[in-house]
Image 1 (cartoon, rainbow, N blue to C red):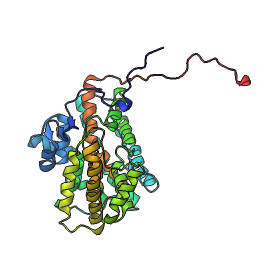
Image 2: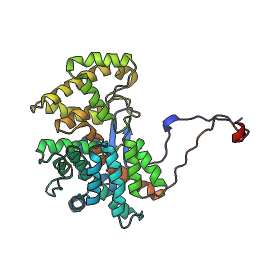
Image 3: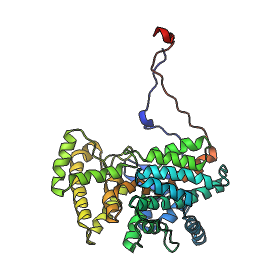
Image 4: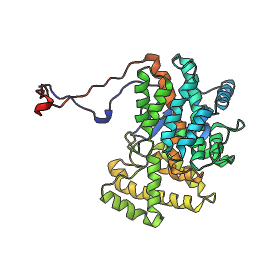
Length: 383
């Protein structure tokens, strides 16, 4: 009898590679991109610069930044065939299904599809960063039966996304808020979607196939869909005065409170702290009644959850918890949250593929078989 090995379910605690892209310190609530703290990047940088940093391993100089930005702006337009598929799907399909299909279609337009040289791969990633943002915006427009809005080259990456989605150029505050969300979602080490991207990339499939895999993984409510689920919970609570009873009842019924707990962070998610601060600042800018209620519910739920589970069980708010109210302050509907996550995370996914292909090895984990052996075969007419 083969001795049963130690099985780390969900690969918990297993190192599958080494990387210089980001570090997550779950015990102390710290996150770094290429050695820079997430707090410094959120306060001082923008998504374009952060994307360059993740892909190239350094902050760009002025010339490098302008060239990188030019490429992003030049590639924003979505092929008309892809737009038509988005239009057909958007009214009846979940936006993540639209994103997955459209991302896969982009492979048709790459005349050098299987070139995996470093510079060629980075160039493909830049294309995907640019176009996935436009695809997400087009999906949001078509869902509401509105016309596609072409990109505006006078706007930065995140501001252009918001313009293409809403039809109006964002204020400086709105531009900062959406750019903040793009930065905070850009990268987070080997999470479920990044790992699935790398598994596909390890087969030497093309970057579009790997990206499509990541989108499929990100759709799940335990990963990218958690912010949408957290918003739905707040909407179900309805009024701030209902918060404590709702949370108490949910905990008593052993229901999962979306937006709390993390596989790595055992303290307060540093990204959630940043979003919380910006949301509180928004309360001084005459928010809509909806946003005001959502934030009040969020703060009351946060207080109760920390008292009950934070200090004793290490279950603290994560970025998904406060994302909903912030997105709603920008007029973005819940089902569009995860497509924005896709558009943001492409920088991280692509950076990991570039790094992994430097020393590629096909993923092939083991599985311990616990079923019967040598079962006698019985012909169909005797079963």
